[in-house]
Image 1 (cartoon, rainbow, N blue to C red):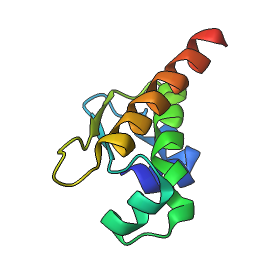
Image 2 (cartoon, rainbow, N blue to C red):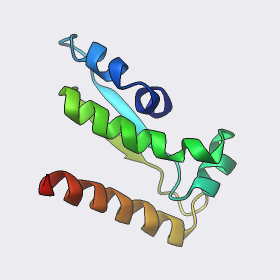
Image 3 (cartoon, helix red, strand yellow):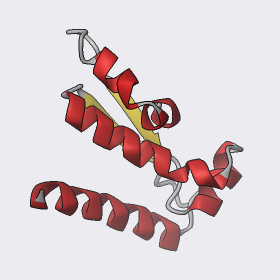
Image 4 (cartoon, one colour):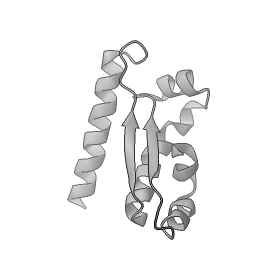
Length: 96
């Protein structure tokens, strides 16, 4: 969901027309390298799930974020980066 919705803002706008829709955006990594390793998608797509969150918020679509946090899969430092990134996104949103 995150890659598609992040790449196409119009998709979030189209989803907003439905009354019974709820989207899950999965964050699978805290770095572009971790994203590529876990998903097989190119590292440049790392930003797309974060853009998806922005697009869904802007469009008023109901959603939640599921962040991978299993220490067997994601190292502690990478998990910390992911949490910091989410906090920065929220702070930026509140400031605007």
